Image (tube, rainbow, N blue to C red):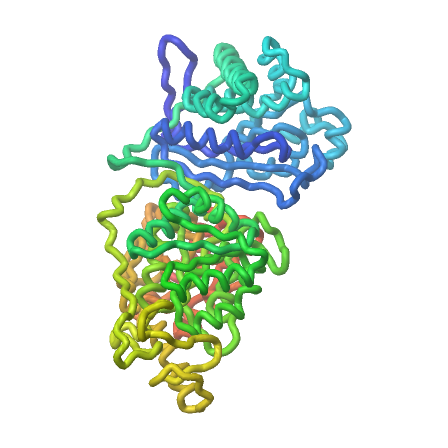
Amino acid sequence: MNTLIRDNTRAARKAVETVVVRLAGDSGDGIQVIGGQLGLASALSENDLETFPDFPAEVRAPVGTTYGVSAYQIHFGGRRIKTIGDEADMLVALNPAALKTNLETLKRGGIVLVDAGTFAQRNIERAGYTTSPLDDGTLDDYQVMAPDISKLTQESVADLSLGKKDSLRCKNFWALGFVYWMFGRDRAPTKQWLEQKFAAKPDIAKANIAALDGGHTYGEAVEASGETAFSVQKLEMAPGLYRSVSGSEALAWGLAAAAELSGRDLVFASYPITPASPILHTLARLKDIGVKTFQAEDEIAAICAAIGVAYAGGLGVTSSSGPGIALKLEAMGLAVAAELPLVIVNTQRAGPSTGMPTKTEQSDLNQALFGRHGESPIPVLAAHSPSDCFETAIEAARIALTHMTPVMLLSDGFIANASGPWALPDLDAIPRIETKHHTEPEGFHPYLRDPETLARAWAVPGTPGCEHRIGGIEKDFASGHISYDPENHQKMTDVRAEKVERVARLIPPLEPDQGEASGDFAIVGWGSTYGPISRAVTNIRAKGHKVSHIHLRHLKPFAPNQAELLAGYRNILVAEMNAGQLVRLLRAEGCTNAEGLNKVTGRPFKVSEVEDAILARLETGHE
């Protein structure tokens, strides 16, 4: 229930539990910068949050065109935030093109702040309008605020003797200042950030701070005129040290933590590709803790370098997105045959081919499970949120090192770029990854196996008496020598498959994330569908419906009790951002009552989409 809060110094502020703000402008308007600052300010205001940078693939589209619009959505408030929000409560559009491409994300009755100074006829036509949307009724269903932000920004920085071009570059911070007033955010952390960011250019810092204050002052004037702003509820979070983290950052730190937990040197070898590159950027800044990074000349060189690291006794990791993973597939077969511990990160994006590089999708599951020549199974895991990337990275490394196998970790463009609060873990409380090198020469051959895991012996080069040959040509089970014997090939194929299946012994029993462990209806998801499904199920259960949520981290092999758990539900809906890859796999595994809820738009599921799909099935008699 919304209420009004009044004090003696300001007009009414409406108390709200959560807010969704979407910022949009030209690619050169600094939208991602102010989005990040709004997230930081909201976290420091004791809100939970989730963010979604949404930017074009073009390096620099023509100014004022819809192709060049960059956006940033943030959902923050006083309860656990698991999604970016279905609809924005407030849209900030810094030019007509930003309004054109983002108005559909704003709920009816929502607030739209536009820069009236950019709505010249040329810009209006370039955005695809025939008349000004400020005058033709386009915005009649919304609360419109249309100050001339460009002019007001120039006035805010007039005392700093900047040129017009440099002055207008500050208008993103003017808009941010207004948003800060609207939702009661503290400007001090942003001012501190600007002073640090532009320490070598203090005039730029002063200009942006002046613009930030100018937008806030304008908001105060609006408030004095009787307009209502908002007071966002705070969330009581468990004590601890928190920071905002993106999926790419958390994954990188998880890999670094895995190296520490296993006592191995981490070497990360990759080739730049959207949206996987930030993992390399993050790890490259960790030289002080011994992390080594290698930007290879191509995808094949990157994975082969990582395989070499594994052969030499280190933790070898490589990363890419779908097109780059396709180039790495042959070398993955080499890692399978050589039985070396290798982590392969696939940050999925919309495809096929180049597709939509900056948009999200989950369409590489088949590639991860089956996309190699020959019989070459590998374990596959998927992270479900930015913060979950940390634990999933450690688990992927644990499996690779324990079972001497390549492992693929699936992320996606949404998880990689989205961010949220993360409680810094106690590294000492995380179980160590126990591994050892083989050093005993007597009776050694490279395919000696651990009886429990079937992992082969790991003898690093230079170990006296343990010199050996490994490679892509099939080896003899009993000696490690090259073998073309048909029965031996059958045996080696079988044992490599069984080794992967034995990973299931490390997987904890699968339990519902919400709801009962059996019943009429369950919705199953994997990866970044977690947030929308979780919120939708919470909403539906609050209405009295018995619906369960099952979320899968382990996609090869499945959790040992997964088949039994799913068999306990009469109806199963599988939500995924592809054309039905997991649902087909589950049906092939015997879950014949599973049906798909599929979306391939480059955007995450909305909570309402999942909720509507569940309710539609309940209304047809599933309950």
